Length: 166
Image (cartoon, rainbow, N blue to C red; front, side):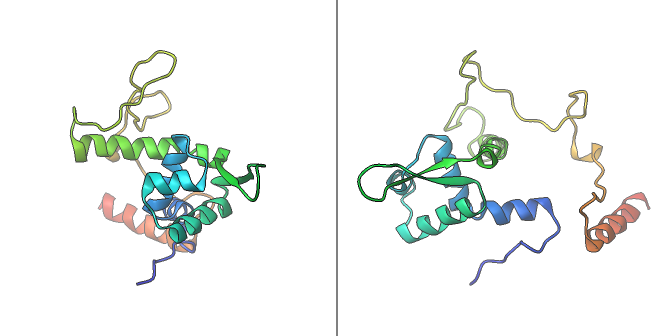
């Protein structure tokens, strides 16, 4: 069965999934954050088939999340490094890890603890906050069409707004 494409959807989440791809791609990005640079390092860490890894690395390079750098040693050897666009996924990976820590593993069973290198204290849990830093819940939020919204997005949001106020 062929994977559904999201490249035509007028949705930031769908576009992020299109760029980041499947679970392999996010695990490759995770390993890049952990310091993996070489094809073999990713392959050993993930146990992923070489053809799938090649395709995912190429996809991440094409979307500007990783860059492929000539390692400059004998023969053709390349390394993969996170770009600023890839580094910006830190918040996404942190949110996924925190969600799994709470809802999959349970508190006190976290497989990984992340600490601030300077203070050695655990990092604060991510929260959606207002401009003053006050935590918000889903019911505190209102979605509205942005400047890049398609006609369909505007229509979908306006019909939901009518339903929620009725």
